[in-house]
Length: 440
Image (cartoon, rainbow, N blue to C red):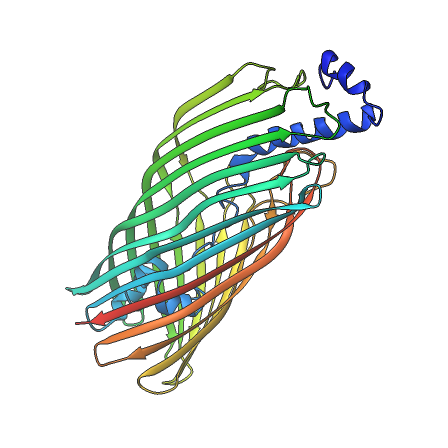
């Protein structure tokens, strides 16, 4: 039975009431509200893309195609073998002036879209290098992923005039990497390097949903019908992220690079709370019971190994003014939860004069999930992103200032309800960054 017997008697007395039609809409909305909350862990954090944030000034301007260059402090992240070719001590700091991501799930409730927006302002890299003996010692800090969503959205007239469905959510997730590096020349044209990052990931999600029914089908004496679901989720992860790099120049104008990295989570903690209260008789649901507050709590600790990553790159130093680079980034699967994938990046740098340089590039940020299949429920969203970058730098004898922009976008499919319905979805990411570096 979709709604209570007593409630149905009151509705049948209405002259304009269509029992099956209204019941179906009412039930569908309740199921929608119920399922969105339980698919929240697959909707919030962008774990389905590996290339969410470009790091550093010169590397960001060249779309991240930096594994075969890496001759400044940013190289401690992209390929620590490259920093040994920097003749001086260097310090580099960059700030993402504004990092915005927008994801739109089309026609989630009726003809209305569900819109998620993250707006974040943060420093995402700091690095310093110092020649030491036959090699170079370095230390760096990198934020490789950061989401900050704080949003309210109200869907009106669902399923009838005056009905509302409200979603309030806050989502914060940040990944920090911090640690030392060392690079060493093995031969005139060959070097190796190692970075050992400490890895920290913090996640906190709060989501409240309220279904408020004030339909024209309900008589005035009928009590307000509603359903409210609240959830909270907190995760902490601590671990290490080793990065091993090799650089080789077979010819004077050609450089080749390879980098291997992987995250090993040695301590993970997860805690979640959910509660639901409804005035509706949802007899087929396991969480909500009519006129009863139902709460669910879960907690646990874990260790895990994230997918491995291998980057291959080549850079061609055409002349004293021009550099062209390309890289291929290969990611392994994760416990059958994600797919292996390959991303590519292409970058170029041109010196207008000794004091001004332009950089630009193209990159991909493909989803590590399989394509969504018709007739299958609870599939992970799939959005392939394509992006471009542009920056310009001004140099003095010992310092530089860089201002740039990176943007990406793509379309795909998702299942916001957790059932077999498929929604079109598109995502757009824009980043404006400012960076400064100093040689001493």
